[in-house]
Image (cartoon, rainbow, N blue to C red; front, side, top):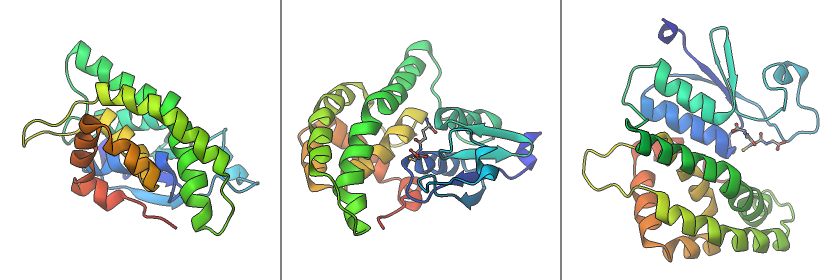
Length: 214
Ligand SMILES: N[C@@H](CCC(=O)N[C@@H](CS)C(=O)NCC(=O)O)C(=O)O
């Protein structure tokens, strides 16, 4: 069975998608190795491009099985290994989970991460110039995304609550977005989304995989 081989995650320490993959592995209780690769350098090594033709992170290598795209990695980890189930049963609950993941990738990633976090937090912390116009545009676009998510997320309502792949996909994006004060203020205006985020962010898996800031 595939479970006997230790999977290796290739990722960049500060990548939000690598964080999602690490969070899923941690919630599932899957021990794994780590190979650091910076996908933002101009020349991503050919060796890495052989694993990921688009030169992004993360990639999961499990024996002879090579898998890129975080949504596929997360689902594989949940289905190929023992541990708590991270996908709900039932057509509607699964569809909602998939919908939130898709909203996160399609509508949240660019404004929350590439615009607000990258230009408002990450670049300045590296001593590089962030573009305030990008931050402003990201905050504008984030309003619609956060409103939609406020209506979609399931707020934990009992002590045995366990997260789904939707929670684990979305929380790191909110984590980075709220590294900026304006992001925190926007989230604070939405009580459901705030309660949901507080519950996921309080989990040991989230805290232990949190990359921190440069
Ligand atoms: N659809 C990909 C997206 C991965 C992605 O965009 N990763 C970012 C880091 S968070 C990356 O590698 N960026 C490098 C680049 O844009 O050149 C997935 O779900 O894994």
